[in-house]
Every structure is written in structure tokens, then in C-alpha cells.
Image (tube, rainbow, N blue to C red; front, side):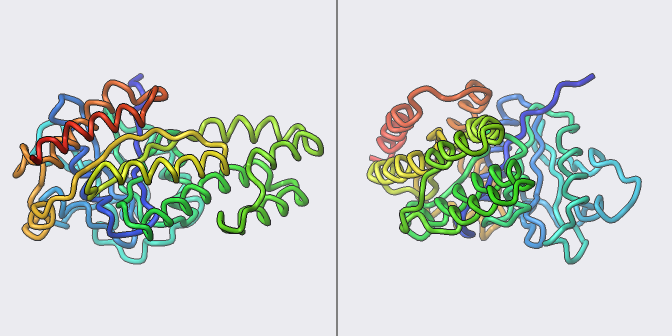
Length: 324
């Protein structure tokens, strides 16, 4: 029996932060390192990952798999021009796939885990829909990507808050009074100073001890990895650290600081030309950053990354030094 692949969902709190571009190029970097890699477009209703791989939109995809009985999921994997890299399209030529049913979601989740590859990178839609949250939760260490602008950071915080809420809700939904308390807590914005997850767990220890044990275990398994795209300087990392401390205090979740990608006008130029950035600009600073993340993925993905912020800060210093 083949081993289960390492599944890496890639999400963002809002659109326009470079999530699909990042997914395509990280997948290529892993493939170039010799790892068999599949990138999957699960931005259903807005699939465009193929454009970042320089591929036409002519293949059957996830939408067809959900509509056609008897179709094998792994047969959707399309070879790309790059060794070790395959691609599973999203909507393909199927319409109205933005809101799939629960049974279809479960079918997809099971199929993802059976793929034969070293790495499976999943490009999710932007935002906090239940489908996005559930696909992100297929693995404990998904990547959340943001730009350093305040609206994107705010949406990042919202996504992570909703991710934790969804995990806790799945534990307590059968206990009506507890479920209601959890919903009341999470419906408030972080600016409203609601009770923290730690405080919620203390209340559960007193009144719902069995639920507290399971909830604490589930929350402890959530460890997203944060990537800043289109960064300008080290001050962006300092800002992210402040948000990290606030979210950790509020949500009782640890984070790994995983990557910093410098802003580069050539990225936008390559997107307009439907070029694969890592192929056409292999020596540019964003490519260096992506390759560094691929190396960290191969070496460090399966466990927590010790001193991740300090490591990323030092790596970013070295990358930005190449700009001078």
C-alpha cells in the first residue's frame, strides 16, 4: 500500500493576494527538487490555477468528478511540461460548482488522501466559506497567505478565527447550550474583546468536561503556516508578529512563520503573459523565496518549526540583501 501524501492546503482571507500564483510556483519548486507533486484547483466557481501553469482550460476536473459516476479521481491528474509535476483542474468545463453539497465535499476529502504523490498542494478559494474551512482542515499545517496591507491582514485574522470556530463547532454541535455559547463568542469581532478560547476551555472544564478534553485536543492540532506575499521590508514581518501574538492569545493556536516573498513588478508581467514565473525568472528574489520555502517544506513540514519567526527574519534579511 502506498504512503499517504503530504497535503498542503493554501488559503487566504481575501482575493488578490497571489494565492494561485504561489500554489503553482511552490508546486513547481517541489517538483524541481525531485518530489512527485500534484497541484489541485479547488477554487470551485473561480478556477484559474491552470493559467499560472501555462496550461489551457480544456481538461476534465474536479467538477466533472463530482458529476460523473465512476470517474477515478487520480485519472484527472494532467501532466505538465515540468517533470514530477501534475495538475488536477477545478471546474474544468462544469458550471455552477461554487457551492458543492456536503456529500460531494466528503467524497472529495476522501479522494484527496488516496492520491499517489509526495506532495499534494491545494489551491482553495479566498475567504471563510464552510467548504474552504473544511478543505483547509484536511491537514493541520495548511498555508495562509496574505499581503502586508491592513485589509488583507484583517481578512487573515478573520479566516483564522473562523477556522478555529469551525473546529470547535464540529466538536460541540450536538450540545445545544454549549454550541450556542460558542457561536455567541465567535460572532463578535476581535476588536469587541470577546472571551478567549482559553477562557472558553476553562468554562467547559467546569460545566462540560468531556467536551473540554476533545476541544482542547482538536485546537492543539491546528498550526497554520503564514506567508507574506508582495512584501516590502522587514517591518512587514514585525507587523505580522504583532498580529500573531494577538491571535495566539485569543485563539490558543500556535503559528509557524513560513515565508516572505518580496514585491516584484515582473510577477505581474509574467501573469499577464501566462508565464510560469519560476521558469522564466529563476534568479529573481521571489523565486529565491519560493525555492527556500520548498526546501523548508521538504525538510521541516511534518513537525512544528522551532523559532520560526527568528528563522524567517534571518532568511528575509538574506533575500532582501540581494536587492541591493
